[in-house]
Image (cartoon, rainbow, N blue to C red; front, side, top):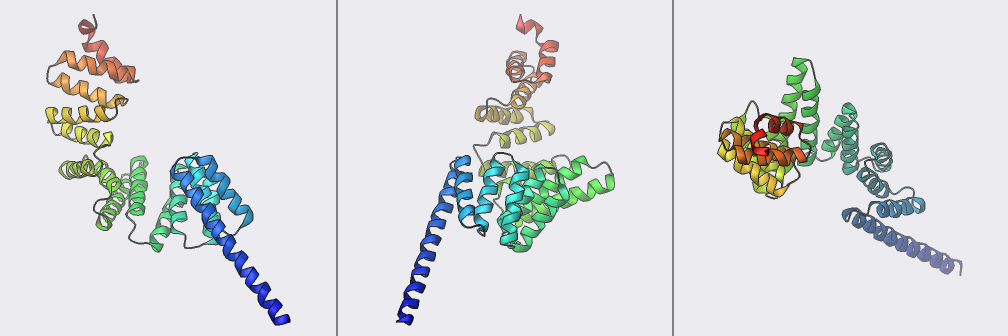
Amino acid sequence: MQKILFSFILSRVLFLQIAWAQQTNELLSKAQKALDENRIQEAIQIATQVIEQEPQNAQAYYLRGLAKYAFSDFSASISDYSQAILLQPNHKEAFYSRGVSYFWLNQNEKAENDFLKALQIDSTDARTYTALGSLYSRMAETETNRKKQKEFFQKAEKFYQKALQHNANYAPACYNYALLISENQPKKSLELSEKYILLKPADAQGYFLKGLLLKNQRQPQKALQNFLQSAKLNAHNAEAWLEIGNMYFVQKNTSEACTAWQKAEKLGSIEAQRLLQKYCKEFKN
C-alpha cells in the first residue's frame, strides 16, 4: 500500500512539474512575442511573473533585460542580464546584450569583455564581431594618442573582416566597415556601401553613405542620384537635403540648390541656413 501511495505521489509531482514547465514556456513565448511586437511593458510584466514563480529562470531575466533595454534603461537591463549569466554562465545572448548596454553607457572595457566572452561561447557570430568592430571604431575616434588610435582602428578593421568572413552578407558589418575605411580606402568602402544597398535597399542611410563617397571622388551627378534616393526613402533627413543642394550648386543649378537647402533648413540644418543667406537672397525674393 505504501509503495502504491509513494508511486502515486511521485507521479503527481512529475505531472505538476511538467505542467508548470509548459506554463513557463508559454509565458516566455508570450514575453518574446510582446517584445517582437513592441509591447514592452507587457513583456516586463510577463517576465516578472515568471521570475516571481521561478526565480532560477535565466531566460526570464534575459527577456526582462531586453525589455528594459528597449526603454533605454541600460543600468536596469545590465542587472537582469547579469542575473541571467549568474544562473546560466554560458548564456551567449546575455553576454552580448550586456555588452551592448555597457557600450551605450560608454563603459568600453566592460563592453569589450562581454563581447569577447560571447565569442568564446560562439566564435562564429558575425553580430558580435561587428559589435567589437563598432566599439574599437568609437575608441579610435575619441583617442588622442595617435599610436593607440591606430591600434584601435586596426582592431576595428580586423573584427569587421572577421564578421564578414563568418557571414559575408551581414549588412551591419558592411555598412560599419565602409564607414571606418571611407577616408583611406575609398574604393573598397564604395564596394561595401553598394553591397549594403543590395542587402538593405530600403535603408536611406546606405544611399546617403554612397553619395558621400561619390562626392569625395568628385562624381557629383552620381552622388546626387544617391542623395535623392536617400531623401526619397527618408524625407526628414536634413543632411540628405543639404547634400542635394550642394550637388545642385556644384552643377550651377542654383534654383534646385536653394529649394533643397530650404528643406534642409526647415529640418534644422544650420549649414543650410548659412548657404541660403549667402547664395539664395535673389532666389528667395
